[in-house]
Length: 170
Image (cartoon, rainbow, N blue to C red; front, side, top):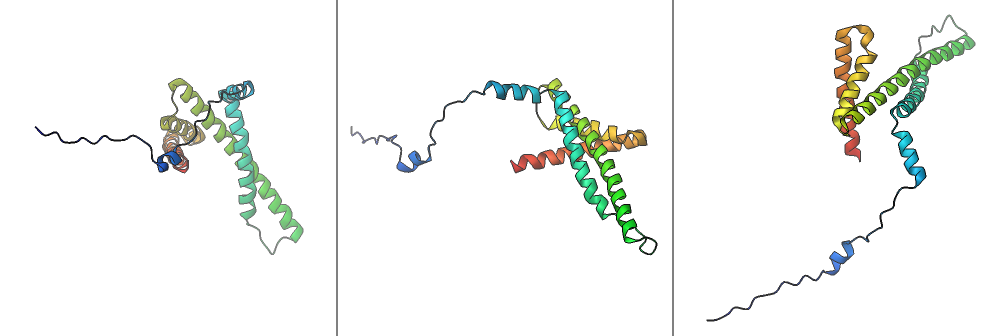
């Protein structure tokens, strides 16, 4: 009987494997201030109000920009001063309207998403879809049931698309 030599595999790491290993970092516990800050931000009312304020600020800025683009001025009938005053009033009306709309939109969406997330105890795309549906339905409810259903479907789809886009960015 002849025995064949068996090669033993060596488990010694090569220099390239050693270079790829990252140093082990210790786990850092959050400070008391960080925990308190997270507890405050996890409150649905605070999160909703903050989102409403930020939405209002965004709406104000967009309204000022879009209001400056509205030029329905009759050149022959107004002086330069009247044109400036008219344009400033148009920008003010447009910015205030956008401010209110975006503030309500941010408040409703954030509140709905937070409540659904806490009720389901999950953070996933379904929360975004439900919050979008609630927001779209609420904003278009004055137009009747058909408008509310269309607003629900449209805003839910838009919210899901934006959420998926933001996930891909990370």
